[in-house]
Every structure is written in C-alpha cells, then in structure tokens.
Length: 256
Image 1 (cartoon, helix red, strand yellow):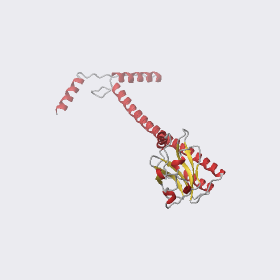
Image 2 (cartoon, rainbow, N blue to C red; image 1 turned 90 degrees about the horizontal axis):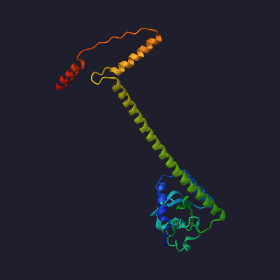
Image 3 (tube, rainbow, N blue to C red; image 1 turned 180 degrees about the horizontal axis):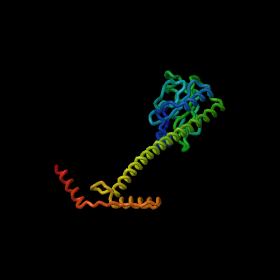
Image 4 (cartoon, rainbow, N blue to C red; image 1 turned 45 degrees about the vertical axis):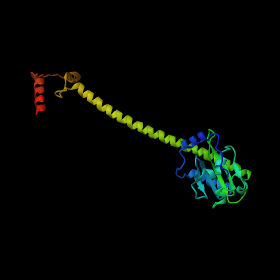
C-alpha cells in the first residue's frame, strides 16, 4: 500500500478546513442529498462526502457504508485531493499499486472501484471529495464523471453557504449582545441623570428644595398666574440657625 503524498499547500489547506468547522459535525440533509444523487447517477452502492485532515478522512455523509472515518494512510481521497481539478478514477484497485494491498480492498469492504471529485474552495484548497465506490471493477461513463464533478461543486458551494450562515449567526449574536449592553448603559445613564437632577435642586443636608429649585418653581407659578390673569401670593419663613441645628442633631445620632 502506498500512502498519498502531502499536497503542496497542506498547511493552508488544513487551516481552511479548520476555519469551516465542519469536522465531527452532525449530519445535514443537504450533504446527504448529494451522496444520494451521486450514488444514483453513478449507479454505485456507496457514496461519501469525505474530508481529509492530518490523520484521517472523516465522512460528513456516508451512504452504503457504516464507517464514520478511516485512517488517512488508507484513504483513496488523500490521493484524489492531490489533483484538485480532476476526478480520480480507479477502475480496479487490485491492479493499482497504490491500493492493491489496501485494507479497504483486501478486507471486509472488498472495494474494487473508486471515483472521487475534489471539494475545492474559492482559494483552490481541496478539502476532501465527493466520491463513489463499488465492489466490482468498472469505469464511469463521461456523463457520470461530469455529473460527479458538478455535484462536488455543489458540495463545495454548500460548505461556503454553511460557513456564511455560521458567520451571520455569530454576527447577529454579537449584535444582540451589544444591543443588550447599550440598553443597560442607557438605563444606568438615565438613573445617573435623575440623580444629578435631584442633587441639583435639593439641599444635601435637609433633602428639601434648594434656591435653584425654588426659583424655578416661582418662575413657573408666576408664568401660570400671568397666563390665567390671577394674582400670586408668596409666604417666606426663615428659621434662624436651622442648618446648625440639623448638623448638631446628625452628629449626636452618629455618636449613638
């Protein structure tokens, strides 16, 4: 068995795969629909949406195969991603030196045929494949190969839409969080403004209206009486040493 070489852009490819956050995610109908179509069009019992990371190939969707992943060393798809613009077709794996002693060929699965179309990002990173497999040697017809490539492009587009949707959700959550913070800030600001307004018109010692507040009240009363054509009376009471008495009382209360 011959393990696949690493792509020239392996570091960037893996970074792009991690950004998508698709590995080990839950099944999604959109990808299951694509494997159904691929198996139907290519007339194969098995079809997969496969992603290749550092150590394994993981199946986002698997039709006709119970496995969720395999080691990268035995992966057909690890060979397919080396040529992002081509479909890798293996008519008979037992006659191919890369796969003749592969456990997927010699073991329980007994795969003979493989065809994989790479899933390529806009930046040219082949992240995995949409592939089909069969237990008998065969070849794809030209129309089947073209359809497999078309479906792989749709899988790549679905990945992009999935990523955009996730980014949009994160942006909305961030906006909601900022909105909550803004509302909390506005509530606190209104409370502080009320405190400032209260402090501006009351005496801090007695809690009664100060001269500013009394002047405002007097001006309003004068204006109201003027509009109504009524007379206004003002009564003043002056208590000598009032604040001094209050300070003395507060001091005695604190000492107790």
